[in-house]
Picture 1: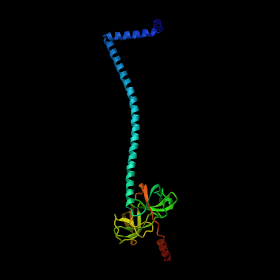
Picture 2: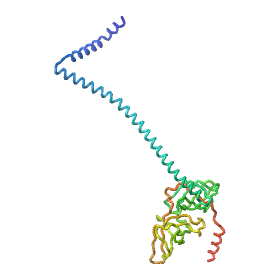
Picture 3: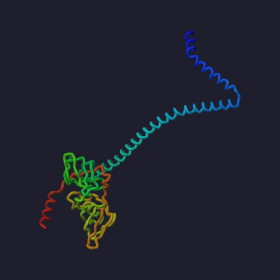
Length: 277
């Protein structure tokens, strides 16, 4: 009890202040004076505003925290959706590749494209298979859509292929419908070209171009592309046939190498005959 009175004596100023504040509030609440009523109304309004503000602040903090959580969840979900889309597209490609391999009459070696150039005069692609996988120079590179090119360099683990869009590329081809023969090349333009086709030859826009039996690299009957236009030179008897490749090299990710070796005896004999002319 003595301690209680000691505390009251030491803090009497504070207790008196609290007492008079309470007493003032009581008098204000009992007073019906118009000015006092206005003050009372204003005070109640300020107290209400302060309470509402006090309630809003925690809500803002909670909303900010919730927004951060939702943002993280959104990023995670977008990443998951992207992975699912990529997996779906990969599944579609692999199904096409598997079907092509099962239906092909040739021995095929699957390869992933790990490097590619498409804006040079001599465009190539790099594959993740090499001599230890049975790959050799001049083996044809194909996809389910059509021919891609041929192998021009090999190491034990990797190989480099020459694309159709390459100044050095040449192969014998045939118009599938009319059986017109020609040599396919690339002159640096948008399309492949078959030059020196007689104006009298039956070639139409939309004709499918395939590899011919005269090719020393590609088996006959593989799709090369489609005829998109033909231009005639009024000064001679020939026309140029422009061909759009069947393969879209910009999105090419997986290919097959046909495990076939050039018939060296045939090539050697043809070179021997030509050298005598």
